[in-house]
Length: 146
Image (cartoon, rainbow, N blue to C red):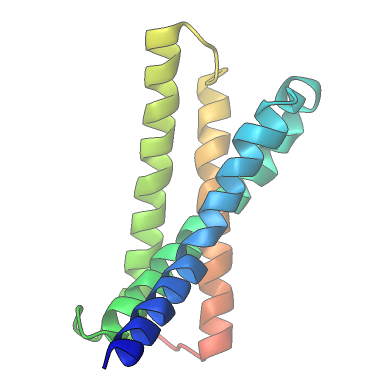
């Protein structure tokens, strides 16, 4: 019994790591590689693909998490369209909260992360495009029609 339980919990841990690793990697690249080396100042255009990858990775995690919860019968089965809609809205909400965090950081610490309103809108746009890209790939891969 113990071996089966450990095997099951190990499989669960491996599955959860597979679900959450993309946004963790994007965040580490953002903080350690780009932020630590101050590459955003030298190459400001890097911010756009980073927000795109952020949206893509969060959408992947949300969609995979929903699938996992449905497989475990923690969440009732969702219509594929609703699954993708929840993925999109959750990802966009995460992007908005990220921008709120940047705003608060600027206000509290006197930084200038949000260079301008246009910069913030670009960030949200590229996060949204990352999410939409994942949704399109999921629709093609799984053949979702609506």
